[in-house]
Length: 428
Image (cartoon, rainbow, N blue to C red; front, side):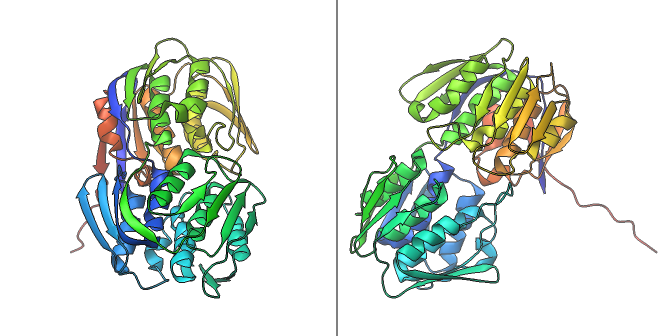
């Protein structure tokens, strides 16, 4: 198991280029199963979740060709099975999109229940409700979901009980080859949902309304091959912006869509950061004392839940009392215990966390509890006095490409090391 060793207390300075959006890539790649031809997908992040997807499709008969680090070509016409390998599927959350893709392609899907980060219940009941509305019969057998339609899926009105990013994307994928028109309402509006719709439309789908409360999909006979470039990662960009805010210094964050970042940069400005937007980059500078702020996570365009732990590090160091209210997931405060080890003063009551700012954090052994909490631990270690060792960094590498290298380019003192197995004494 790898770990990061970080010597903190150094302001960050330099430039960092943002990779393709993880949350878009993990839906676009399974959606390529629906394409009758070759998909060339550009700006693909080199992260472990993407690698797992490519391994799944290769094992199922797809022809995958990696052109370079961020470009792949996928030809899924050779895939014949509706049952992806369970051992790989169960290792990450985004594998749930295989249900919609398999239903759309074959009219049947048998998929292991997804794994991934553990921060409360994240049921797929809204996904199932939509699949059922489109004519699929869905059953759970052990640790798997079996969904089957009588022929092709049928377009229908899918009224969700709540705004769900995962359900919105999964139902979009399932509906593009269905007979008739599907309506998803209320639909999530995150940038990666718009990106998925744009990818599918580029391959011949007929989707409109992505980015609004109502998405309509008119089913088509087939999707054709083509080329598509994934948008920059909003959360990766927000993580580096927050790192500079916590550790101090200044940086130019390149290859971003500034509009997508406004829900994040607005709070960082409130905390004391100075931010300048350009066409495809953002400059951030923070030299003064951090100020308190209150945050409530909400669906886009509200403050993203995936940026909540990173913001918590800043608030742990901000003067005064700050409050975070988690409005999306039940339990996303596991990272708080790690911050408390470093000297933070935080109290959690259900979905509310109260931060009493402290002058500094102290380096110590900490762990990544999940993907975004792991990024927060790295930020805390960068801002802390002394050395920290971050364990369980496999969580972080699910969603951040070349994280150590990019932070090193910003002047961070961080290195990745592999744990050595214990040496056992010989018994003579």
